[in-house]
Amino acid sequence: MSESARHIDGFSPHPWLRGAHLQSVLPSLPLRRPFVEWRARTMLETSRELLLDCGDDVRLQAFHSAARQPHASDYLVVLLHGWEGSARSLYILSLAQTLHAAGYDVVRLNLRDHGDTHHLNRGLFHSCRLPEVLGALRDLQRRFSARRLALAGFSLGGNFMLRAANDAPTVGLDVACAIGVSPVLDPATTLIALEQGAALYRKYFVRKWTRSLRRKHKLWPDEFDLASLVDARDLRSMTERLLLSHAGFADLWSYFRGYAITGERLAALRVPATIVTALDDPIIPADDLARLANNPSLRIVTTETGGHCGFFESPRRGGWIDRFVRAEIDAVRVGNA
Image (tube, rainbow, N blue to C red; front, side, top):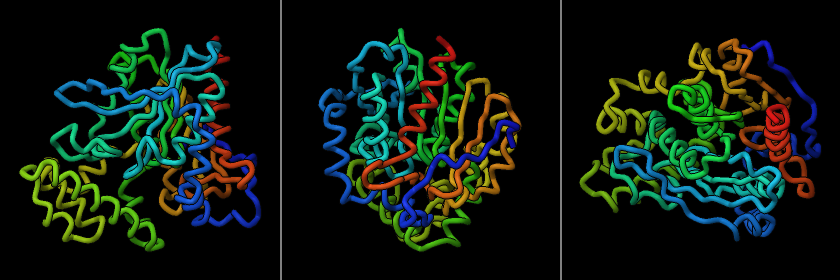
């Protein structure tokens, strides 16, 4: 583990909100959408769609909200959702609003086959499609050449952003910092946690993934055999069938190694990066933190509670993680001024 790892007690949710499962579910409850969208209305009103050229005829969708105040517009903050989330996920909207109100240019990026983007690209999404995310970031850098990139992602999106930061110097990206919120560390142990943990998470991901595959198949009926995937009914079998028949991986473990960030994956990281995760995360085992490379550019922040991408303090104060991410980007920006 990085020598710069530290545990903080700054996140103090209401006593009734301290459960790991409650923390994981509460921030994304549909009942919160009207309030979150109302709070984010200014950011959403200034949002415009971008279709990013990622190379190899791949396009990814993003939404740009220009800064209202010029003092922080030297940074372009790019936010990335988790698996089966989207640029309109509540945690993305909440953080985007916080950053936009602070004067930052904000881009909310959709991964392939997430949000309303199944029509854009023929092939199916999988988690080793890092090159197209790097391509999207390069296109953003071309469009906003006066700005440095600050990257932040949740869960699988956090994993993507940390890998992107790791590869940034070799692909010509000017990345000021990267923040992963509850990022996937080792997908193999995450799958085990999902299989052995509360059934609600397995059912959630199977339901949303199946719905996404049906939508993709309707648009690209000759691209894959839908029945062979959705008939599996569990995450492990669905993933194995997808990889072997459509993604070109030899087995599940070679696929997992392709996007794990444990071991030496981040050993060469030179971009200032922060991982923030809760010790009670029911999806990302905290023990995997000890398997990260010891790198002075990587800071690991843990909280006692917070669940998976939760960090919800109270209905009045909302998400602690929004203020944390803003403070991290502010600190890097001030340090580089």
